[in-house]
Image (cartoon, rainbow, N blue to C red; front, side):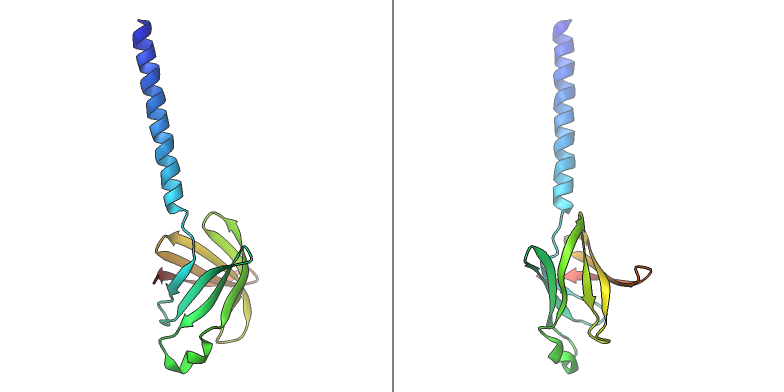
Length: 133
């Protein structure tokens, strides 16, 4: 009888370890980072997100509309802090108006990033971007 109990305990322990491993792997797989080049679908603009002093920065790396080519190299986000898993917050430049908004970068998946700009944290507008490289 003690062999049966030991066998059940061992099986239960093994199942618990496998389940814990699966949960850890799924969390690690989703812990995507925003670093790299992303495409803004509404304008065709490409933005490079990179580490700067332990924070997140972003600058325009390519434009679809050649009338906007002077914007290439413009830093639109600097010094964003990681505020939660898959989320960074910092100042965001609207190149069209020259205004600075509260920006929130949220990784939706390894290939989808949502960038949102907010005025007074109430009026927000965002868009999901796709990873280029």
